[in-house]
Length: 220
Ligand SMILES: Cc1cc2nc3c(=O)[nH]c(=O)nc-3n(C[C@H](O)[C@H](O)[C@H](O)COP(=O)(O)O)c2cc1C
Image 1 (cartoon, rainbow, N blue to C red):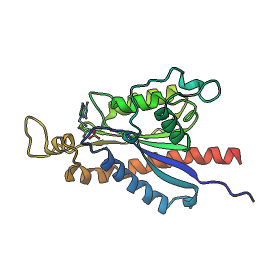
Image 2: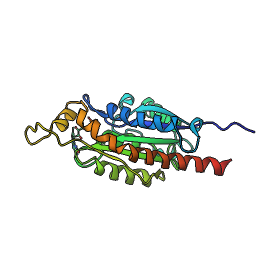
Image 3: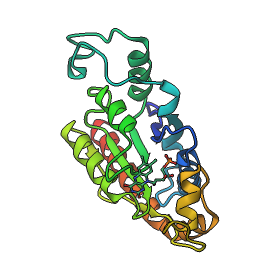
Image 4: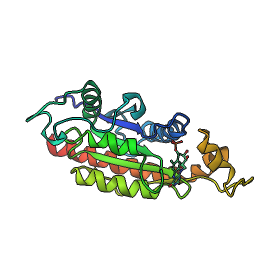
């Protein structure tokens, strides 16, 4: 019987500020995903691998290619090294877990910009969107779902939202963990509160895996 390759899943850290909590949130999410993979419901551990992708490391300028990404690679090629590197990295994966902050009621501009470089690399592939913010970043999640679905990807139904704790002491009307987040530190109370979100994250991940397994079954 032919060996089937494990499905590759990227956990994407979206925020790119100089001081940021994005990598800490991605770590929190990854630990939950790893636990899910180590004790799978259907005994399918070996079917998936997790990799970390940090958009910040690609230093993407505001989209600066002459060609439309939908033409790449069949009808056109990217000219710039940064576009080629980002495109090649994202093309490697079968599915994605996107960890996004919320800036002014939408996703960080650099996430939207990074997505604008893509098309065929992600077409038909599943995404799990996990957002964080004062209200859990649901506006960023909604906006990214619209963009990704416009690009013919599949966004899984469960989109977990992680809200910062509204904890004392308040300063300038802002709770402690909100101020800490602004300074690039994930507050302990928020991390504690988010333990209750583990089941949402696990459910979204299950939906992502199911989508990937369905594909595998239909192509077997
Ligand atoms: C420019 C800017 C706009 C923000 N707007 C929102 C917002 O609309 N909703 C929200 O929940 N948090 C907002 N925040 C607070 C962020 O949720 C918080 O700073 C968080 O740490 C951002 O993620 P990051 O540290 O990974 O960049 C904003 C932060 C910045 C820097």
